[in-house]
Amino acid sequence: MYVAMRDGLFKSTDAGETWKALGKGLKNLAAVTVNSRKPNEVYASTVDGVIFRSADGGTTWER
Image (cartoon, rainbow, N blue to C red; front, side, top):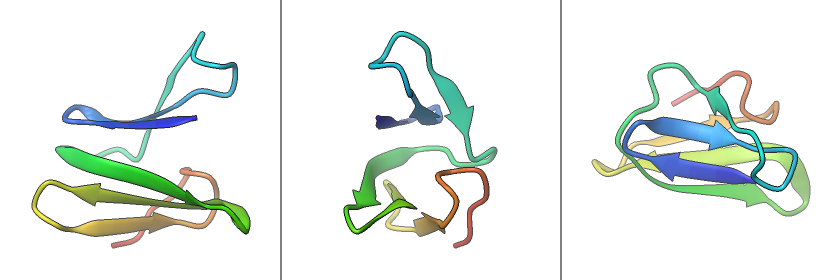
């Protein structure tokens, strides 16, 4: 489970019991989505419309 917030992007693998911050520098996020055919492919967008992509479940990101 992922959540996009003003403070960054967070991931939980235990139904929300604990959260891990992902993507240092990702701030002011408006949305996050996962490719249903490739679960490790994650997209995050900022409130300014910048889109970031991760191919490894959120470990690394590219604009």
